[in-house]
Length: 264
Image 1 (cartoon, rainbow, N blue to C red):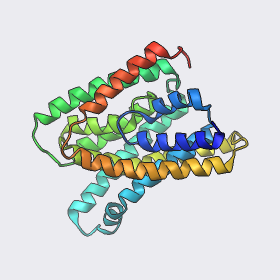
Image 2: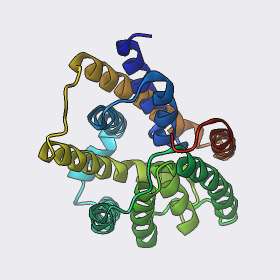
Image 3: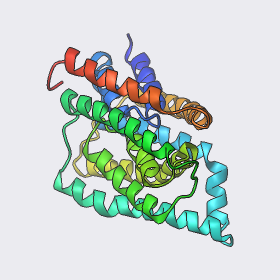
Image 4: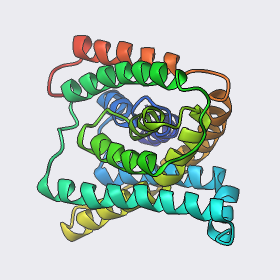
C-alpha cells in the first residue's frame, strides 16, 4: 500500500469516526497499527478537516446565531454555547498544562470504549423516561463543557458521545437537540484544541518533515467524509436510538483487549 493511499484511508476514517459516538482516537490507533504511525501534525490537520465539515453542515445555524442577537431565544442559545465552551477552556487548560491525560495506548482506550458504551445505554434508557425534551438548560451547557474535558483526559471516550449523553442525562432528552448543541459547541472547542496543539509543536520545533500532498489529501478526505457522516447522523437519530453504536463500542473494546498487544 502506498503512503498516499494510506493517508487517504486515514482521512476517511477520521471523517467517519470524529462525530459518531465511537471514538476517532481508538479507530486511528488501530488503523495506524497497520497503515503506519503518523505525526501529531498529521492527526491535527485531519481533525481540522472534520471540524470544517461540521462548520459547513451548520453554516446556516451559525449565521443565524451570529446575526440573530435581537431574538431572545437565539441570544440565550448562543450564550449557552459560549458557556459550555468557556467551561471546557477554564477546566481543560489547567488539566492540559498539568499533563493529566492517559496515554493513547490500547488498554485505556479499550476500557474507555467499553465503559462509554455502557454509559450510552444507561443514559439513553433514563433520558427516554423523561419524554421528548428539546430545551437546552444552563445545567446542560455547564455539564456538556465538563464532559468535553473528561473526553480529553480519557482517550477513547469520544467527545461527542460523552457530551451528547451528558446532555441527555442532564435534561435534553431529544437526541437531535442534544447532538446539535454538542456539534455546535464542538466547533470552537476543537478548533481551539487543535490550534493550541499546533502552537505547542511550533514552540517545540516538532513539526518535522511532512509530505504535504499526503496531508492535503487526508484533510480533504476527512472534510468530505465528515460532511456526509454528520448530515447522515442528524437524520438517523431523529428516528433511531444510539444502541447500535453502544454495542459496537463494547464489542470493539473487548476485541482490542483480547487481540492487540498491551502498550501498543
